[in-house]
Image 1 (spheres, one colour):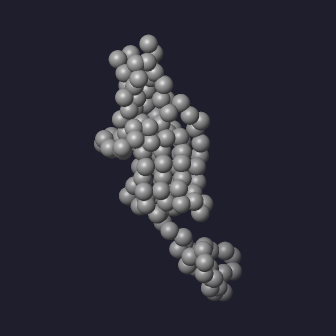
Image 2: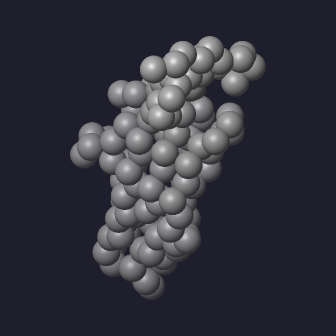
Image 3: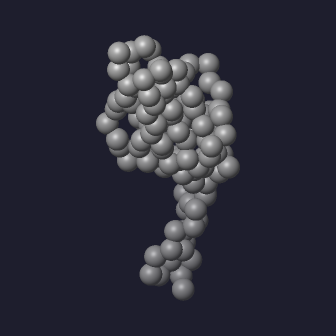
Length: 129
């Protein structure tokens, strides 16, 4: 018999053009709005632990206990997501901070120009100071 233990290498994950982003629980994740985020919680323990997911302390239901899938993330999906594994011996918990940024319609400023990046497939306009 053993206390549950959540496994996985902690990463700092940033979305750069990915449609699906996968990270181990405990990582810090930066995703672009519209991305699918998969948070993975690998657990060992005997007896087999039960897994519960939470966002900001509120239970989140998922069909696969080991993976929380957040499809088409929005700004309001930002927050702390926790995986808690428990059995009769004890518990273990790890948390991921997810930050969702807006779509690529940012304004980038440089010394002598302003570029509006409308989308990855469009050209940008320039203006002089």
